[in-house]
Image (cartoon, rainbow, N blue to C red; front, side, top):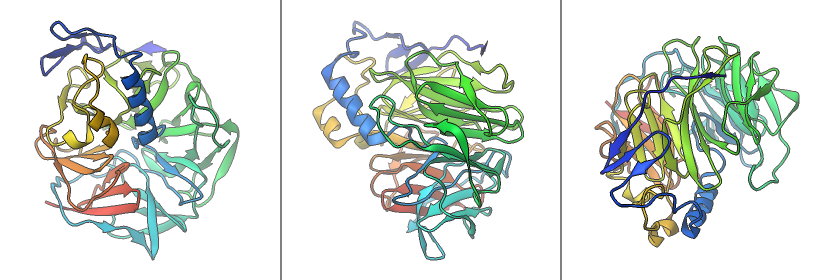
Length: 413
């Protein structure tokens, strides 16, 4: 495996200087006391229960007992419009079929997929109209090729740390979800991304990453991650050249410490994993393009405009859905009221053509920022947990998945 050159990174935020490996200097504060702190362990358990194995960062979950689910479209489509103010929201249904699952897709996608109780649907015009794409897909998480939404994968991994869970076989479709073929022997594999032109696919199981060099037909281990780390967030980067695939991925250790990496897949035979770009606590959600990376975390939204070299954290307006202390730095525990109400940014979305607006789906509602993430305000009419966001490339719409189903948020220019 090649090592990706990573600049010496230091981030300054609120008087705290943090290196990409997580070492901090906080006046006279002590470090490392949170590793076995009982409050931390309780909060980790709470966060995992709230967020599940993977936040919505490029994959969507489909449970055949409740609904069905599709796959995203890829990079290389039309430039996303400069949309700003959310308007009144409406539940999404297609031909009377209530939509329950939204498949994440970049803002440059050529198509968006959703799943209703009766089937899989696709739009190629930003939600102006929808067409049937196939029956309800197989159980598990679904992804579509970044540069060709006709290639889809569906599968899931069991709860690795806790054991149990159904044995789900990875399935593949090359006709946009009209038909599916199970892949023999590929059990407990959760797809993360597909790049059709590069004939490449990435997935995760309880042992780490998996790679396919024939667009998901056959698989092999990809031993690039540190031992004992579980992939908890993944987002393909929106790049101008689909022949140079890349992604952001995050791993989380048993103690709750997460690390964010850049994965360069330009040469699939020799992938390059960066040094940690940032270290943060708890689970997170990711999005990004060639230069700007966005991380939603328990402590707020972190942004980098220089490919992860430096980071700034923003929490203004997000106080009700994030925590006020950083367990990696602070010596005081997380306040009880914050533990009781819960916290987390489960999904983030951005427009690669513009720094504004940004969107964040949380454990309690949808938030938007119009000043490059510095301040946030809650969007009226979006209640409950928002697990997935998709910014349509045309049509001025934002789609959000909530416990009551997928909703459509019109956006005012």
